[in-house]
Image (tube, rainbow, N blue to C red; front, side):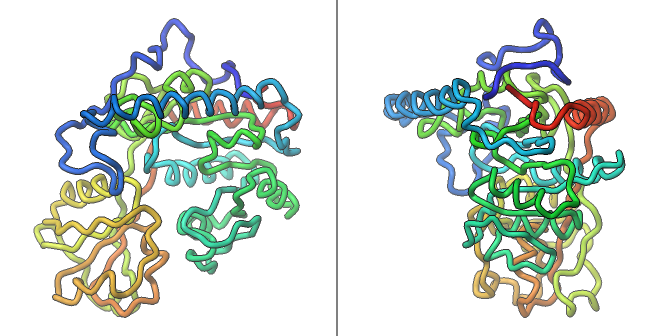
Length: 366
């Protein structure tokens, strides 16, 4: 079960009530996350029409969560600490780069972390171990990305407790980090981090299907930390940025070429939850961007990138690149991004890791 608890949370008197938090702080954005209706961010006439269905959805969510609060033994408790990193909204918020940062931080503190995730975009239900050489079309792009970046044990599975058990059966893991799964209540957990995109906030503040929320805003009052990807969102306990690194060649042929330079026009490819963030990042680096947005976890085929044969450089996200390494492309590049929490946020995250790893196994969030 999940209830409000202490840890790294700020005192209640210093918190802003979740129901009073701002909705989208980016009404000027020309597009929403690909595949998401615009009214999820900006409101509009469909919202009142969908409010009755939202009410049904809220009741179903409350009933499901209530079941696990009343029946703690229904949870799949693991014999190791579990930290869940998730979000309330549909679409990307920057969870995966933060998970990678947490894995590296846990390593630096002497822990042996492993990661579980559903395997979105993959065909296999799991549980299945993931290696840097795994096929992202089978196990999901995010799983392969995490395995390549961290070289830590990674297991995918639609059944998160089963995935966690498979991870621990390896014998070399003492901390389980779940990428997403905030709403996967069958998975017992010792700590929770909710990630919010500071630019989009909680959208129009409504739950599905009237808005982008998987759970009501009040759910934020029960997590250990609310972290904003970006600055200026007043409901956050801390902030981090996604900082770009140097461009990397996507293909061996590209490795023999010079990377594109600021001022050049480039094809920008993003099949992520919020492609506009990637395009804006490239523009902030000085590139002139021709946008190519695809659905999140899109299964790329060479034909999808035929536009890149005009000699104009192509730059894509690292998550998309794991599915395109074998494509016959030239002058094609990857822009890696890294989560960079500010100093106060790093201290809060370190305290949270310390708290959940120093309690007896299985005595997590009640």
